[in-house]
Amino acid sequence: MAEQLSDLLHRSVDDLDVPPPDAARILGRGRSIRSRRRVGTTIAAAAAVATVVVVSAVATGSGGPRGAGITGPDRVVLPPVSAADQSAYDAWGSWAAGDRLTIGDRTITIDGGIAALTATSAGVVVRHQAVEEAGDPGDRAFVLVRPDGSLRQLSIPSGVVTLVGDLETPHVAWVEEVEGGQRIHVWDVGTDTSLADVRNPLTSVEDVDELTADVGALGDPWVHLATNADVGVSVDWRSGAATTVDYLPVADGDRYVLGTRGHLSFLYDPATGDVAHRFDVGVTPSLSPDGEYLFLRDGFSLEDTGDGEIRRSLDVPGARLRDIDVWSVWTPDGNLVGRGPDGTVRRCRPDGACEDRQVDGWAAGVELLLPGRTP
Image (cartoon, rainbow, N blue to C red):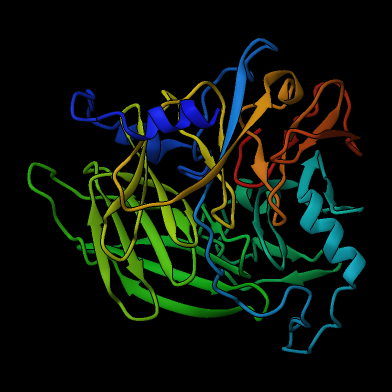
C-alpha cells in the first residue's frame, strides 16, 4: 500500500477534467447541504475496498469542556453531564425513530415529533415537527437534548429552518436572508446565547442575478458558506476575516476544510484558500470532526500539491463496512454511524471494526433520522 500511495502522491493532476460544480444540488440538500457528501447508492460490495486516509491533525478549537454545566431556561446552571453519559454520546452519537430519540445510551420521547437533528459537542438540537408543520414563528422550535437525556429549551428563532452544528464545540450556525445579502448567525446552545451576527462579505458575483448562500460547514472560528455562484466563502466570525474559494465547502476538520468541485474534492486552508490535497474519487469523501480521517466510499486517487502531509494510509476491507449506508454520520469521537440491517444502526471505527445496535422505536415504515439528514 505504501508504494501505491507513493505513486498516487506523485501523479500529476494537470490533465484532470474539472466540470463546473452542481451548486443547485449542494444548496438543495437537506441540511441544506447537510447531507454533505452523499450519493444514493449503498456501500460497495465485499470485493470493493473502502479506504481511510489519515491527514494532518491539529488541536481543535474549544467551546468549553464537554459535559460542562450549561444554563437552563432562566439562565440557571444545569448540573454537568456525567462522564459516562458524555462518553456514550461521544462514541455513539444520536438518532431518532418516530418520536423516540436515542442519544448515547439513553432514549427519550420528544413530544411534538422530530423534524431534524443537529449534533454538537453539548448534545443534539431537535427541531420540533409540530412547530415546523404549523409554521408559527411565535413558538419555540428548538430544544437541546443533552447526553444525559435532559432538555434545554433554546431561543433560536423558530423561523430558522436549517441549522449546521459543530461536533467539536456547542455551536450551531445558520444564514438569514436580508436585503442585499445574508447575515451569518452563530449560536452557543450550551448557554443559549448569540456568539456572532455578521454579514456575508460576498454580496455579488458576475453573471449571477441574485446571490444566495447557506452554511456548508462550521468550525471554530470559521463559518463556511456555499453559494449559488459556484464559490465558497469562509468567514472568521470572531474577526470578520474572509476567504473566497472556487469550491463548495462541506466539512470543517480543524486545519483543513473539505470542499467539492465536480468530481473532485479538496482539502484547503480556510485562511488562505491554499489547497493541500486533491481527491478524484467521483463521490465526495466524508471528513471526521477532528480532521484526521477521510472516509472514501470507493477506490480513490490522490494528488498531493506539496503543502500537506500524509502520515499513513489504512486499507479497510469493504466487507467490514457493508450495510452502513452513504448517509452515515460522524460521532464526536470519530466513529461512523449509519443505518444497518433490520432496524439497527451500525457503528464503524476508522480501522474497520463495526458493531450493530437495535434502534429503539423502530418498526416497519418508521424512518431512521440521523443528525444533518432527512428521512
